[in-house]
Image (tube, rainbow, N blue to C red; front, side, top):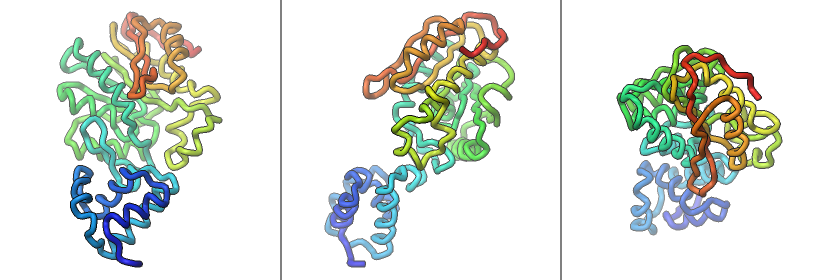
Length: 287
């Protein structure tokens, strides 16, 4: 391989179709430097890269050009001020999911400091860990049906020294007790959604949920009433066009104060409501 400077390597990556930021972050990764060192690349734009570094950078650039998420390639993703380990066993945490965390923290501000919180479909542990890290007194439980995903979440909890209870199971099937707040970013993509090919590197079971993408949301809403304390909150992330349907489901199952929160693009990305029934009310029939 011809010896390349930093600038030449970045230009070559962009020629493959990478955007400039991804190329810079990949180059910093192979150089063993933090993401925050992008200024270093500008100051050393004419530095020659060691052949081994240049070769590794080219290989990683090809992976990114094929559509593999940057987070899988570098092995981590920033979420709510935390660096989380991620790989192909879990979805890559999205910035829009921080909307759900912020809303949950707002709701928890009026609840006991040691409130019981449940994160359904935890994946990498992003929501559960962000809540626990932000409010250490919370009693947080995280659930996932995937053994592999729970291994990633447990590793992240250990890395950040955060005490989380983990349960392997489908939604609330293996959960006992009652909670002040239940939050979930469940699968919500329709089985035939045309955007799925662009997500081919991520686990399909964590993305799709039936013909309309609402199968898991229906299931969670129906089960949640048996596990929420009076005045407890159920908060759900969903697709860009599902807010009206999710709010209707919440209202149908007896939730009040039903409302939305918008994502970074101003789209209704989360919907939720408050349970005003009695603790331990039987699950409602999914509609």
